[in-house]
Length: 461
Image 1 (cartoon, rainbow, N blue to C red):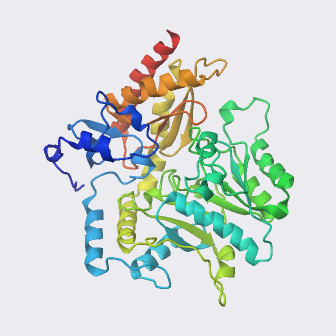
Image 2: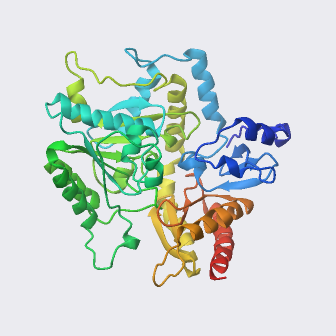
């Protein structure tokens, strides 16, 4: 694989000072980076690995942020961008089209479930979700059902940061500091089966969606939005039949079903679209991140002909868009990215190696701190507990000390980038590039076993 790398020696030694003075990082406690605490500066990447400004190597066990699916340093993607700039640098999709957007939309529609044939481009995941929510409201309005504006989402689910997408996000601490949000967001239980009572029926979480629709009044509910595997909280997988039941509920109450696949699309679960993994067909799919393997910003929503139809007639218009959405350069990179997927059969690779990846994680269950292992494809989480028998979790102070006081820093120091998170109960999440294989699984295992073992000893002390 060709690698585009910049020698670490070329990285300026003053970057730390400049970053602390001028760079405002996202979702980061900027006050934590004092004189004795460096900002991690990632300077280059190659395959499943990245290197910091000092030349230290790290296994990228999170694909940057669930998105560099083909791995780092694919120079052919940069070459595709360069060729595109020579031909057409930019033109918007506002009343115009360009070949790259047309070709990419056609290719994505060919990969999507049957009936989802219309592609609306955005610049990223929050924009894709925002677009889907606006479309759901507008779709019902143009059919004379303007009262249908409410949205059903799941607790702890993360759907984005813009005010509309944030109304779907079910994480209190992310929502509360920006309230009031766009009205209409309603939340129901998620599918964290590990925390369910043993006697609970598998259909319980789907039933809760119908109960909430009936409580709100079906005539007021526009859409239900769900991830195939819920990210926040730690890779919650659905019980058997869950999505089929939700599909039936949506049809029964004239509610659109949105599959938020910003993470789960593009091979993360072993299929181009996560809904294929669980055998359901939504009305709208949102996607981003790995559509270009993050080599350029891009997102999209893929829409069924039924939902798109009212906007395709006469003088109708979906009055929504973004200047840079469907950018020719990003579209060219996305096409080259899909060429890699096909040439290397990355979806097939994930399906073939998923069992080995899961078996490696399952082998850590003998550690006292490991309560649950869950997920699908190359998207898994380990839930951490104080007591395996009772499933007792950690209070806020213990979680802070465990995750930020020890785990995050120690995992990084040992050469593994993953997510130690407590949106919900404390978890460690792993989502390596889709090219990862046995060698990387072994590295992940060795680091996790040592670090989680030490974390368990600290908790007991």
